[in-house]
Length: 589
Image (cartoon, rainbow, N blue to C red; front, side, top):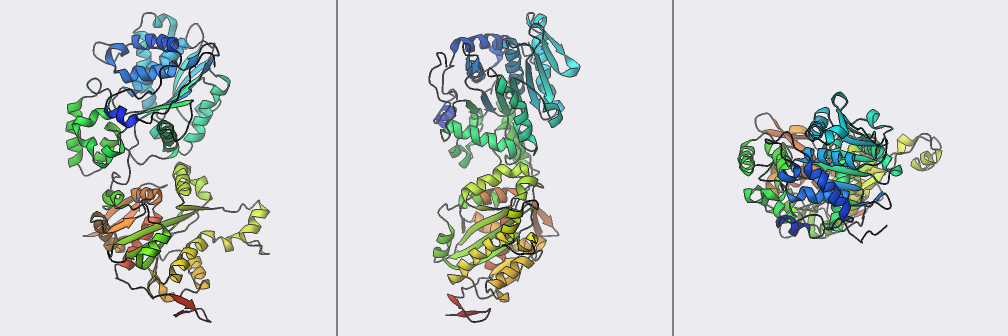
């Protein structure tokens, strides 16, 4: 590095900075002359769709210039390298994000020195692509110098530099368009929408691949929050840039400017106070009108169709979680505050006077969810512990939730079971425990054995009731029942739990207990995700049922929880410590 200072892209004091309206860029431009050169160009660009056509220099707050200086000021002109080459801007809607995108890429086109280079803006839809291209084209046409230097080609959404023959292209992304691109500068607009596309991760990797041979290039991700829980490439990028910002990951090559509320303000719902709108709207008073936000918030709070969720995500940048999902389970709003992080399986067994179990799911494309509900000694509160198992094929079929699945595995609340490949004799042999017939399907019970191992542990502690201890969805439980029989569980211990509207009492009752805080759970990411995936629907005059918010959403551990709640509501008593008799039955000690 020729003359570059030492720097860090971590901003561990971001919560204090953002509330105090201070810069979220924790480092000065690495090469001040490069930053100044870029800012001179950027500040002179005109925003043509604003009355009076002001320049960026006249119309923007300082955060915009800080971000632009961080990007272009990281270029080492002697080495010809971009020292920080990936950036992310997470900001509320209407803070001139698309216009900023246009300005950054027009500036990059002017400064680019590589002949016939390609500069690329990827947008998830044609409309969003136009939201970037139209202001970029306007900036060129409104500048008497740029209009001689660059030629917009409107029908191709392309701006061509007439000296270097470099082209700035704004495209609605798909794999065919992105494949084979060799762009040195890439800007991805509305990353949250790419998060809903299971192919987006591969698409973006292909798009960014051009920087391998173009060390002077950079990639920029611009986005608001998603209107549902972040997933896919949005989730993975957001987690990465948050970790870098917080100092949990050291990566000097990446920097994120993330406008979001500190957790204490989320917990206290301070984001609903108009006095705090500025936290995620740094351009308030310019492109954002505070009075309009206050009025629309009041309207959204009165609406019952999910408008509040969209408003908070888009205009206040509040990440959608268990408390904000549309048509959510009524207990979701209170789920987080009932968490007890110390509640492990062993802790549940130690603290409970009786335990029941619920089990749900288990298809190859599903989770197999196990939920234990214990009644706490003394307080009589319900204690909830859950775990899930998933076959490896889920990672292939549901790529948009892979980041969430991996997060749950890292947490220890999800177990991945490898599905043997028909073309892999060793894998088949392992799956069939060496059976000569090689029938892998007959022994695909790794997940079921995992469930029963936990049930045996509870049974041996004497905490299951003598009858109706394990609640099962009647559909597809044959393999589980067989395994339970092999492990000496009596038929009376099992109870088929009718699903659909017949779970209404458990769905409503558990919501009430959660609100009253007479429930405690482990506060796991698995259950927070699954609770957030639950959609509650009315059935008949007073019944309700649960379904999934989206096809890829998983709710099996929550469905298991409701099955367990049906049994716990019967006020069971523990059978006591048991020992095996000579036959399949159990004998009380």
